[in-house]
Image 1 (cartoon, rainbow, N blue to C red):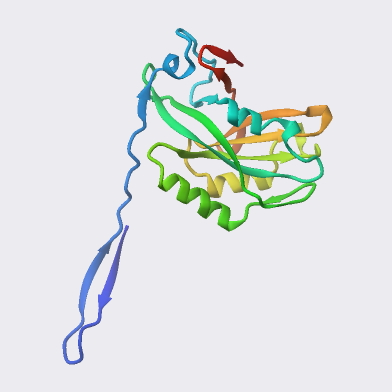
Image 2 (cartoon, one colour):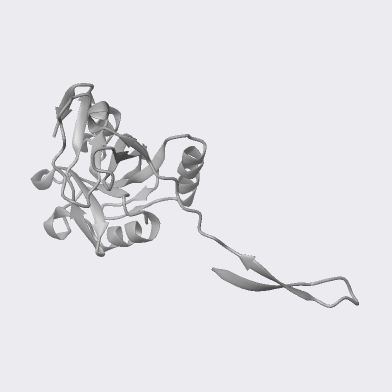
Length: 209
């Protein structure tokens, strides 16, 4: 994008017109990795639809996102942190390794959660000061099943669309209602959330789908 600007000179001198250029800086490509090296099991390839990232959930993140880790009377939310790679065996596919689910400590009610502005500043500083940790997405809970299919609300879609804008960023929903208790993972495509699978990696050599 370009924009014409006028630079004011000292009295008695004519103003001169300059050109301010703002250029998009492309993100560096992620490092290639073989899934066997991350998972610790040769020959294991999670079943992932075309266009979806391969998502690996490390133990610490998995424990933090268990339904029994959250209060049942108000929504909670936070950020998904970890590493992003390129699948060495399928270069067009992104691999996300979720290593931490960090609480945002926002304001929640039975049906809403508000991320405080300072939480984005804190996580932004953390990512900026790291050499390999990225903001992979976000999570929040639904204490009650009030949305069709026990999925995301229109407000959730709008938040993801406006804040988590990279095509590989993901959203996790933790349903706390007993009838649909569990964890679901989504990506946004075509203006809609779509369920995506993920693989829990307990330790090197032990995988749970």
